[in-house]
Image (tube, rainbow, N blue to C red; front, side):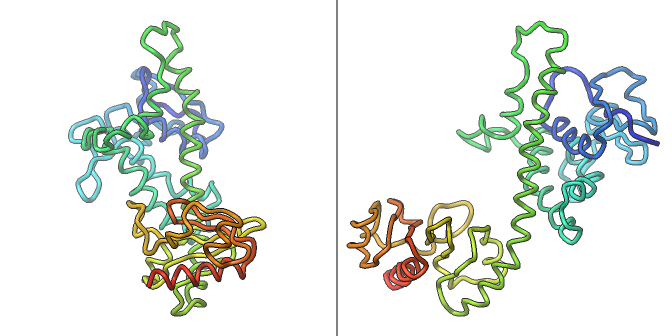
Length: 305
């Protein structure tokens, strides 16, 4: 039977049912979102999917709530929110609808679950505190989506539903951007792996364009690579490699004498004609030609070793 309604609870909204709605509305674009606690509507039927309300979790009955006790748990014992339940059931179909190649679906499904879905699940269930984000707690996705709720003295009878519908495309943009980025990293990996093989023992990795490369470096255990070069528009870019995604520290910095210099001053300091820019933090430099950027990379390697 065709899904005609996507049913979630009325009143104030949270990130879990909002993000669940992102997934479900892509898969069932003709279905109507209904926000209610009416008993008839939150009783399972073949033509509706019920989530974050209803007091039950039953995939066959198409009801995905997590507020009952005991609530549904992942294999490792961590709690699900409605988003995690919806992702587990419909995430693979959602990725296919997003044109993710079939060979990449399982890996991206698992990665998105670990990086994006699980934190929402844990926060919604009180398994982690917002304070874990420190001073950035107000800038987390759940907090930003929550800020779109109506203010306390908005007395419009449709305020909550109106705010939900306003927040939905914003939430969608974050989910879709993350999926596109994961898919792009997957596409890039084979290109970077080939470039690492071509580089051999060289500490300089040359790529055909700017692209995600960190996961491929880790996969290839290419710890000897210190700098990456690639074309950028009409110029060429030289970049350092961070020790990890959790720090700004690099395997090697660009020469201190280049820091903050541009054009003629950088050409003089580096001895490289065509040198155009070096960031003051020494993690990126730009030159006008491939030959110039490779020469800058060689100099940077010599100073780093």
